[in-house]
Amino acid sequence: MRLRHKPNAIPEMKENAFIYFDGDVNKGKWREIFGNNNPIHLEIGAGMGDFIIQKAMANPYINYIALEMNTNAFVVCSRKILDKELTNIRGIIANAERIEDIFAKDEIDKIYLNFSTPWPKKRHNKRRLSHKRFLDRYVNIIKDNAEIELKTDNEDFFDASIDYFTEYGMEINEVDRNLDIKKSVVTEYENKFRNKNMPIYFVRATFKEGDTK
Image (cartoon, rainbow, N blue to C red; front, top):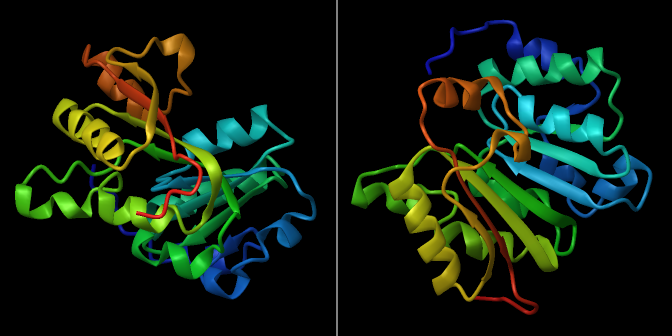
């Protein structure tokens, strides 16, 4: 879905104390920023923030960080954070390629990948957020035995992601090829797929202790 350019998105978000454009200066300091030792869950590619906003509202004792590079989409999330007065969520404008510059080892307890770009062409597969190239980055910011949850409407991407996780030595904890709506944090984006009777694919996997592939 192509979003209309919002010329004021960046200036608006720079006025929002919960949004960071220079996340790398806070590497190793995210628990200080939240002011507690609660677990930190990271969504990579948060879009307009429907998923992470719902998670933060439902789980006040978990801290959430939303990473997104599309400012036109993420300005919507930034407004929701303020409107709902959510102190357990922060947003970072950055490319996932830079994730190791933003977080230190053991800072992240869980990672969410929701409806990531599937990059179907073989020559682009390495851009997938579930690809080994990114798993190598994740192990440098997560705690041992951290989980990753992936949700998508694309079956080919889903099957490939399970293969990536398995080949990496991760434990596959749950696989669901038609996720029940009652088990899902349903966003507006996901609802469009469900209204077309498209199945939602879900996998939950664990990084094994000491993973340093």
